[in-house]
Image (cartoon, rainbow, N blue to C red; front, side, top):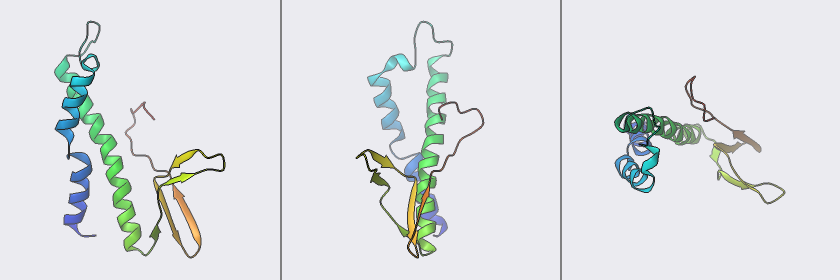
Length: 117
């Protein structure tokens, strides 16, 4: 993977559609950003939303970047959506194979105050 491909993947996940998504969330659920008992101002809440969204999207970009690196190293990338024996659909962050060995990776990208995980 070259630098341009790296930047393209990162920008695609983090910034593509960001403004559209924010406007849709503001229109669909304005109470998330303002309210009588909300201690933060709407502008601050919007900034918090964007920063958290960037952190989540950064994790998504890392999944794709790791897939590309693994592919470049000769691993075969497998579909991330699988079904367990009970028929439950599961999603795997990285699922790849080499030499008849299957690898599963669940990755986390977070800072020390992220309480959503």
